[in-house]
Image 1: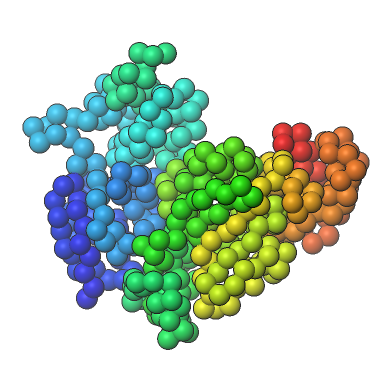
Image 2: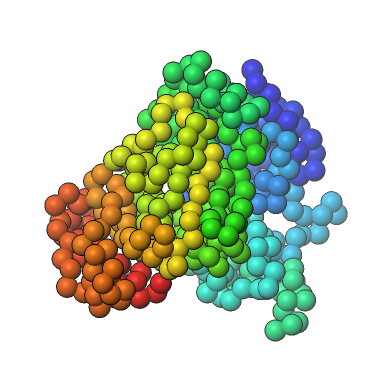
Length: 163
Length: 263
């Protein structure tokens, strides 16, 4: 059986997979990292978003073998070892940006990439537009947008100060 | 998904050999269309040959052209300052494909090899008169697109780059399907080395085509008013649950006027 070697949340792994194994299946079924969800399985909902070498991708639409040598970050890898949440997670909690929570891991991972891609800061409209790859059926998005706006101020304090 | 052997070639010629060795082998670029196709069991390759890691991505800007590697992602294209400045219609187009996560993986070469009848890039390639560069030859845009999911590519041929001459003006307008965001009608207008061209996607059963009546009118007078009276026949246009052929024909007029006005 083929093997793939990758680093997930800072830990190196070598895992036996099939050619057809999806990255999300590797994460959930081989590494038991079930925080990454499978919603639609058709690359629309974004519940499966993880970071590959710092960029957000839909792990249901990437083969595990394609992650050879990659640095993968999942929702489990965001908080510090002592349990301190990532600012995005903290702001999701602060602003009640979730209800059922199913979309939340993907939302948080996409949101972090979105903020990273816009060091100059984003308007509310840009945040809403930037979430086009993630679906939420509970919140109406409003509190998610508020949480991301608050988090970008924590993640890029200088950009906000310059405004 | 049916299982397959996953192979990582060391070079483009290595990849070509893998294709030649097995008629059921298929290439994988960004996978944003092909992996969903595999999941639906619409294709059953014995071998997947991964084009990542062959150095086929990257954008170079020369005085007379911009060359985009076949494996360059939509995100890299939309955020490239040279493309934004010199071919703004192309940067805008890339920014409207899929979503951020899809744009981080999906590639121009993959899209062009697939030639989906609703894909955006074929309009830019055809309207600007780009050249498809493969491991074997250079294919002019006019010869490349040959109908729905059909191109001039041979089974063992690999798109390595796309060369765009620099148009004086370019713009893209797209009426997006509200759910899928695919083009119900997409229009690319360009004024440049290949002349004045209007290329349409999403509308016709055979995929991308040039709208010669619009082109002739724009050649006389480059303005939205010049094409106001042009009626597009509905013959050969798609009719589905999203829009009738007549509606798409109407949209072609609206989107072309917007594209010209914004160019």
